[in-house]
Structures are given as structure tokens and as C-alpha cells.
Length: 361
Image (cartoon, rainbow, N blue to C red; front, side):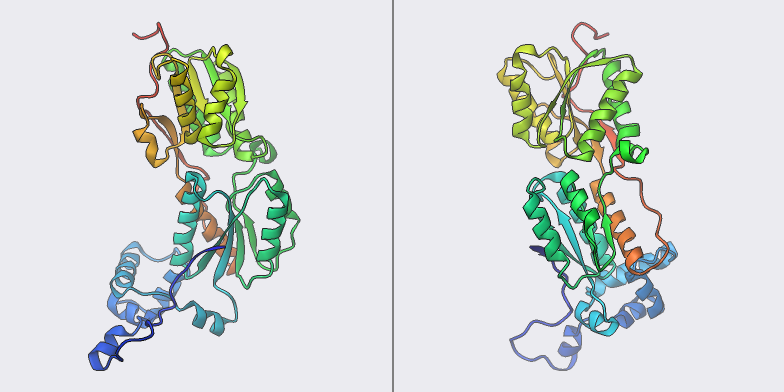
């Protein structure tokens, strides 16, 4: 288990005991110290730390500044003893080295810390049913305030929904559009804008490298891809499934090398797009002159691919912050705060796309 720890404000042991002004300077700041520095009441500081959003912006700025200047850290142990409840949240995720999951966890960690909670991160192999059951069994025994599932395939979703948790639990993942009847912004806005842009460049022959079939996010992106093509009277030359990795994107192109008819490859994430670009190059094709390539996510390296990758930027960190706040509203039994639209997206145009051959103005 990997833990994003928050200090309890206790000075480090050892060394020469401090006296007088030194001892006062070493003493951890309290909410009363923060209140005095910010010129507000301690109740206002307390409400801010609990994630209350009804604080005026000017007052919020003063509290944030005072917290930073005093290097305030909540004493979670004391708070737990006083309140009789835990201030830890368990977060289930997968492949933390991948950009999407890591950004979601980062946003969730920040939101938890700002609210005075510690995020216990449990990473697991989502393709291993035993690992899923073991992880869920483990967190049900922990002294926690709530549980988040920050990534999920069908097996994980089923196991999570069938578990009776003793504390509030939130399956904070992209739901299947076909199941909910409500499209994510990525499906409703992102893919239509991407396909419209590519069609405007004269492309009529498309190939999609999709994610794993057992992932709702993969199915959503495939449906959005096909639906966006259909709206413009265009058709796909095919869909090849990968596993989100660059290697699977490479293998996808190589698997159809003798039947590659598309002038543009639409990958379901940037890593698979990267692998596809290498495969196309090894096949003697030029990106984007012969085949344009696009991705989804806008990972930090996307701007430095060769050529730089056109992609749909997704705000995963905002999703992580939003779901933690939603879970804490259940923990505190308060009205849920307005949740930001899932997977807010933006089309980022770079040099991996250009006019289809013979169509440049």
C-alpha cells in the first residue's frame, strides 16, 4: 500500500531542546494562530479546512495565505481521537505510472489534504480478479472515513458494487454512456470536435486504436468515435484494441500492416498513439504526410513526440478533486457540492495531423 501522508504537526524527536522564542517558533501552528494571521475567526478557518465553499473569495485568499505562511498541518491523530472518527480515505486505483490514473490520484490527494484527510492509495492489477477481491477485503478492515475507486474495469465495478462497506463509498470512475444514457464531455464534445477537425482536413478514411473492451472509458471512446464519423457520413476502416500501453499501439498497427488503408489513426490515449507512430515509421510511412495520428489525454510528453501529437486534453486532476469533495459530503452528511463535469476536454492541435493527401488547398 502506498500512502500519501500528512504530518501531524509533531516536532521531530532528538536534538537540543529549544527554549524561549525558539520553542515558540518550533510549536506547530493551530487554527487559532491561522485565524489571527488571517484576521478571521477560528470558525472560518475550521470551515475552510472542512471544504466549505460558502466562504467569500477575499476571506478564502487570506486563510490560504496564512496557512501557507504558518506551514499549518492538521493533527489528524488528535482530530480522530477528539471526534471519534478516522480522517483517512482509501483510494483504489491501477497502474499509477500511467498519466490518467496518476493525475486523478494527484487531484484527489490535494483535495483530501486541503480538507484535513489523508489519502491511502491502494494500487492493484485490475485484470486480476483475486487481486481486486483481496484489495477490497483489505480496505474493509481499515479504520477509514470513506472509500474511493479511482479507476475501474467491469470486474472492479462489479466487485465494488457488491461489497457492503461500513463507511461511505464512491465508485468515482467514468460510467458507461450506454448504461447511464448521459454522455461525458469527452464523448459529447471532445470526439465530435476532433473528427470535425480531421474531416475539415479532407480525411475520409479512419482507423481507431481502442482501449481494452472491459473498460467503460474504452467503450465510451469507441462509441464516440463511431458516432462522430456517422454524423458526418464517414465510416471507419476498423477498430483494433490495445491495452492503453505504447506497445499495444505499436502492435495494433503492425497487426494490420498489410491492410492499412486509413489516412488518419485515432488512438484512445496518447501512449497508444506513440506506439502507432513508431510502427508507421518502421513501415516506411511518414507522420503526418502519409498518415495523421491523434491521441487522448495530452500527457506532458505529447508536445515532444516526433512530430508533436494532436490530442484531446483531459483534466483528470479536476476529476480527482471533485470526487473527493463528493465523498466527503457523504462522510459529513452535508448537501453535495456542485460536481465539475467529468472529463472536461479540449482539442490541442499539433504537428501530427495535416491535410489528407491530395486535399491541401
